[in-house]
Image 1: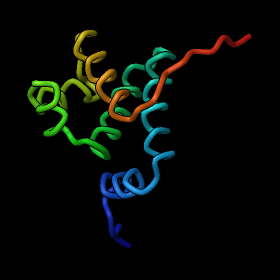
Image 2: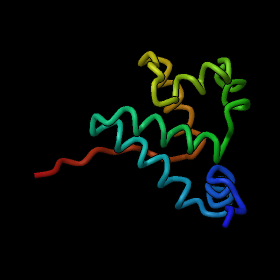
Image 3: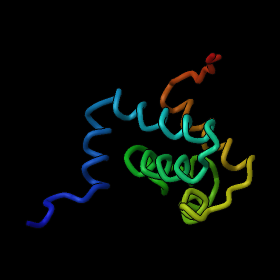
Length: 105
């Protein structure tokens, strides 16, 4: 049996109606980055961008090429730290969230 909706469309629909899910995607990307799993962080962040602002709008807001942003967040992308942090800071502000770190034993 064929799927009726693509994964991308399903994630976007859920992100549109569920802010907790949307913020959870962003949080998962950040957790992956902080755990040293950069590849997963980029992939989850790419899903987040596709489900929320989109690469065209993000590119305009950051004065960056949407194609470069897509390439940067691909599994094999190699973003410069300043570019990645600019994207993260922008998305954090857009989502109106604060990121905190917690010591674990």
